[in-house]
Image (cartoon, rainbow, N blue to C red):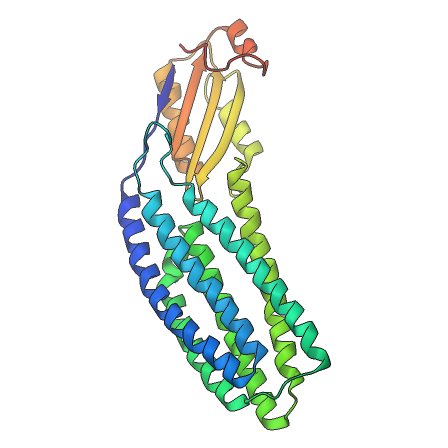
Length: 310
């Protein structure tokens, strides 16, 4: 007896809200990105350029996040029974990889500059960095509330946050160069921005890959989940427990429960409540068995687990 538990529909409303926020942040970021690139070349500041490169991955992050929301809403079809929700995770993965490459490039460029630092116009650098910081803070404010609910928006939020810190670094650097004339400060700041970005990119990369590899979501303690299922009234053993996520908020579970003496509907309801309330699992397939030999058969991985349905 396999039964399913469907989606909640508040998801669509949330997604629409996220899309509006991301669009606004994207327009802000792209406008400033263009200004920062031009200013970076005019003032000869690697810190500004590294911040601009970062700003570019920001804009890309926001654009990808937006596309992911649009594509993710496409309905499931015969080819893609889960629809296109995973696109969000591919977007996050692509994003993290881009951040990685940018950070490495900045470090390389900085290394080249240590031997011959160029002349830097610190005042222009300072003005641009201050504008950049203001724009980042506005974007952060917009994205903050949604970042908790979506890995996609979280990726974009993290980019904007690290970018704001980048701007702060550039402001400090510009002030130092202005007052002391130490042009090498610019390179140091660029390197620091590069090193700051790397671990963040790595975390996002790791989370995305875990989801693509059908890993157990980080927030679920699988051993505790096993215990909780075993301790349900009437359950003698469990097998074929699989937990994975389609996106950061869409967690699936399938499990076979061997419970020969219990009313299946009651057990089903209990399991359903426990899994959705305590573990936030959105979709589940429970197979309740009462035939021991059949239950044991399921344990052999070479057997087709779906052929013995009650």
